[in-house]
Image (cartoon, rainbow, N blue to C red; front, side):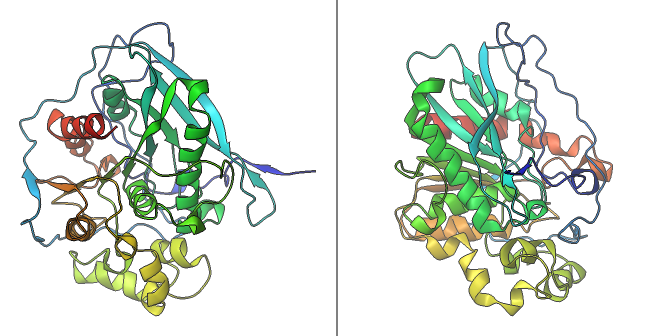
Length: 377
């Protein structure tokens, strides 16, 4: 008898929920009625705790990084994005991949596909990849921001992916993103989607996976699972406050935080690259660290990128997105990076700042994302 695993039980209550953003829009469950109230209040995230990767350390300081190739964005006076209300069709709990986990169980990996109804012809679609510190992946995150994109005629497929909690590594996470793309392309007609117009949009850990999936197009080693007869290539990538060179994830931070990554074996970053229980850090295996760095794969064939980071991000150094952005530019790939003045790492309301994440749902931040996808999809 085949065992089915929906996800490792109990882990979600003990870890940080990173990248779960709120906006002025909400996806209605009733697909026959446009959304009436588009205001979503800020909500507290779970308390920070340990989990399979040893916790998520936060720095007390953030050093300024190079801004010469980026656009500094001050969103303090920008209004929250609002929805007018559109009719949507939502397909929930769609299984797009069935990998076998280390314990022999089969993980039914799911997505929720939401399609705006006021679009003529097949609808372009963006794969939303949530954050979660490589420990969890909640496809219900950032629902308001996703709604704002749907208001502009683009469907969203919110996915989950294998994490540390499932015994997964970054290679599994990237493979799951690519499996989601292949599923949508292979089944586009069933959902009214345009299989030739697919983009990626990731936050935090999801942004890292979006970057990796975007720069490894054509690398068959990451294409495993179902629907291998269709391509996992995408037309555009948006990554918000993601990582690149994981050995420098704390490069902009205080010494204590830098020492954590260098001296703490099996920290959450190391675990998602090397696997659990190695007794090492990424500094002990530079070859593996390089293989997990999106910059390693950039060769000029990548799709256009749009990158975001907050100047006051205390979880992932702002210079991380700069590494990817500058490497893309050097290779001749269209890339734009917004450095959001004073912004932190998404919605960190669990630290007592329930409004701090709302900068990420302003028109100043979301309108360029909408324009980017409209242009490239």
